[in-house]
Every structure is written in C-alpha cells, then in structure tokens.
Image 1: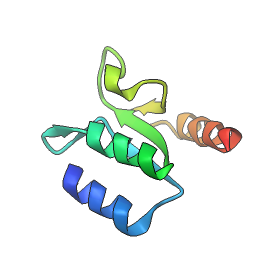
Image 2 (image 1 turned 135 degrees about the horizontal axis):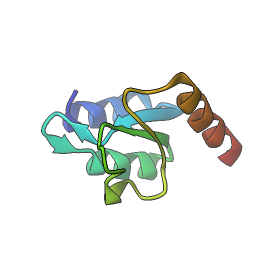
Image 3 (image 1 turned 30 degrees about the vertical axis):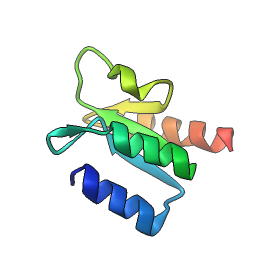
Image 4 (image 1 turned 135 degrees about the vertical axis):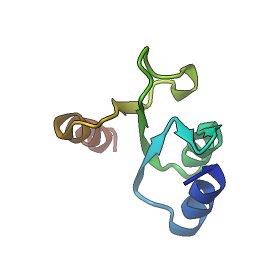
Length: 83
C-alpha cells in the first residue's frame, strides 16, 4: 500500500484506529498521520528503523517490526486508555 491508497481508505472507512508504517511504498507516512489526526483516528506507528522512530512520528504510540504480540497489545491498551 502507498500513501494515496492509505488516505483513500481513511476517507472511505474512518477506522477506530490504524497501524501506519513510517514508510508506505517509497514515501514517508507524514500525510497519512496528519489525516489520522484530522479525523481523530488513533494511530500505532510501525517501523523497521534500527536507530529509532523518525522525528515526524512525534509522541504517537509505536512498535518496531517485526512486531511482537506483547508490544502490539501494550500499544492497543495505551490507545484504549487515552479514550
């Protein structure tokens, strides 16, 4: 999936929360994260970055890939607590 497909899905479906990779296709996910913020869609960011999350991720919940089930459960619990 790329950014345009992710944006179209957000506009069409308006999910409760989304897993968004830091890179979608050859693009970064900044536009997708911005749209999630506009639509108040809670986000868990995923990445394979070795050094850490890119700066544009900010303080959003995140997990590193390959994802660990416990890390995903913790991130989802964190989103639920913010509600």
